[in-house]
Image (tube, rainbow, N blue to C red):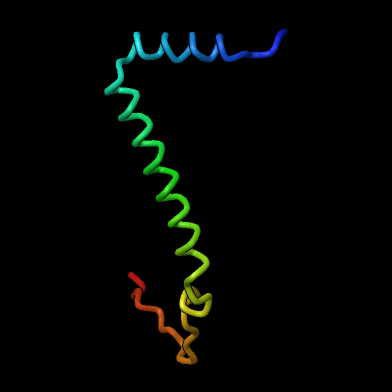
Length: 70
């Protein structure tokens, strides 16, 4: 198979514009950009949190069985 050149890329972009329209392509690009931004924000927020806050606190008190036998 040959390489994809600038003419083939232009043809694919033109075909996409004809099929979907400029507005739909802009909406898809916006959605992809927001998704990437939220993903990066999620990764950054994960790193910023204190690991000690994520673990549940251990209690010394023995938990009693709250279920009564029938």
